[in-house]
Length: 579
Figure 1 (cartoon, rainbow, N blue to C red):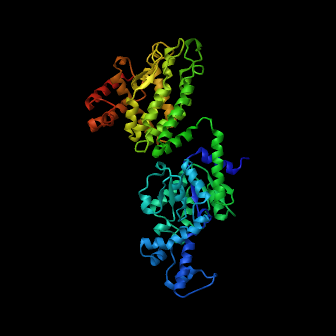
Figure 2 (cartoon, rainbow, N blue to C red):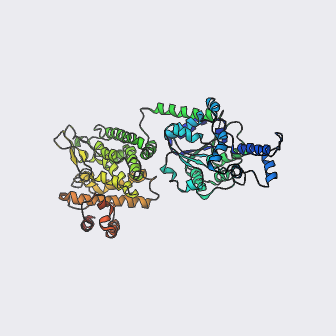
Figure 3 (tube, rainbow, N blue to C red):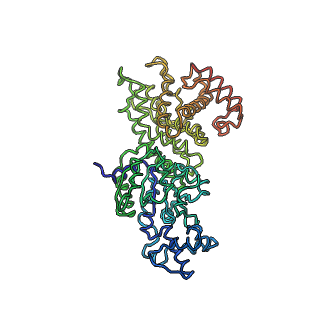
C-alpha cells in the first residue's frame, strides 16, 4: 500500500493551489517563539514582582493577576495597561518575538527550515493559503526572503478588504491575531468566536481546499474547531500530522473529514521532507506531458505576478507547439482521400482533435476569464498560439481540401474558448486581440504562409464551406459548432456556475463572430448559417446594443468598425441566414 506521505506528495504536486495549511503553535515553538499565553503569563509575573509579590512555580501568575485586579489577564488588556502607545507596545513585545543578536546567531526566533520549506511550497505555487493560530511573523519573513510578498489577514479590517482567495497566490490568515497589532486571542472566551469576515474566510478554506494540519491539536481554539466540525462538504483530502500523540479531538476531526494521519518528528522534519518529495516527483516527471489541471493552476499563478510574464508566455508557447506537433501529424491524421474508407467519421476527428487540445484550450480559457485586471494577461501568447496551431504549409502531396481545412479546428477551439471566457468576464482587451490580430495560415501552391484575419482563417464556415456540397454529408457547419460547444463546456466547468451561464457565453461569442464573418467575408453570404443559437440570442444582443449604443463593448473595444445602427442591420441579416 502506498505510504501516506507519498499520497500527500502526489496531492500537493497534482493539485497546485488547492491545498491550504493549518498551522498551530507546534510550528513556532521549534523556533523558540512563546505562545500568546506564555507571553501573558510572563508579563503577569513581572507585574507581580513590581507589586512586591513573588510566588513559586506552582502558582499561575494569571490567577494572581485576576484576583488582584478583578479582571482576566487577557493579552490585549494586559498589553494596553503596560504600554500606552504603539511604539511602547512594540518595545514591550519585541523580546518575546524578535531575536537578540545572540539568539539570532543561534538561530532562535528566526525562520526555521519548516518556515523556509513552506515558503518554497508557496513560491512554487503548490500552497496558496495558510491559516495559522500563531502570532509571530516568521512565516511572512520566510516568504519575503524568497521575494514572495504575502497578503496578511490578521483581523476584521484586513479581512473585509481582502480579494477572493482564488485571486491571490500567497495569503496568510492569522486567525488569532498578530502580536504587533496586540489583537491576539488567548482566553477561551476570546477563542469561541471570530468576526464575520474572518469566519467567512475560514469557512471557505475548509470547504474549498484540502488541508495539511501541523502543530495544532484543536483543543483550545474552540470556534476554529467547531468550524471544522460544521463543514460537511470538502473537495480535497485532509492530512492531519502530529508529533507525539494525535489526541482525541484531533482524531475526531480527522475522522469527520475522512482524513489521513501522519506522525512526524517535528514541523522541520515534516515540511523539509515534503519539499524534497515534491521536488523529487517533479524531477521524475521531467519530460512527461503537462497535465491539464497543473497547466490551469500555473496559468492562474503566472497571471497575478509580473515576474512570471515570461513564464506564462513560455508555458503557452510550449503547450501550443507540443499540441501542434500532434494535431498536424499527417500520419496520425491523414488528409489524403485515398486513405479514407467508409468507416471514416468527421465526428471522430473532432473528438480526437478536442482530446489533444484540452491543455492549450484550458490555458486559453483561464487567461480569458481571469486575466482581465492582472499583472499579466496572456493576450499575445494566446493570439500567437492560433498561428502555431494552424497549418502554415499545405501537405506535401495531393490532399483532400476538406480535411486540410479541418486541421484548423484546434486553433478554432482555442479562439472560441478564450473568446467566450473573455467576454463572460469582461476581458475585452483579450477578446479584441484575438479577433483582430492576423493568423498565419498556409497558402495553396506556396511554401510561404499568409497573414489573414482570424474570422477568415478560423470561422466555422471557413472550415466547412464545401463539406455540405456533396462531400459525405450535409450540416457540417452545424455539426462542427456543436462539437466546439460540447468540448468547451466540459473544459469550462470551473469557470461557469451553471450550464445556462455557459450557453449564454457561447452564444454571445458566436453572434459576435458571425457579425465579423458577415462584415469581412461578404463573398460567402450564401445559403444558411449552421449556427447553434436561436433568435432569442440575437434579440438579447440587439437589446444590449439598443441600450448601450456606441458604448457597446465590441464597438468600444475596436473589434467592430461599425455604428450601433449598422450592427443592428447585420443582426437582421443573420436572422435571415439561420435555418
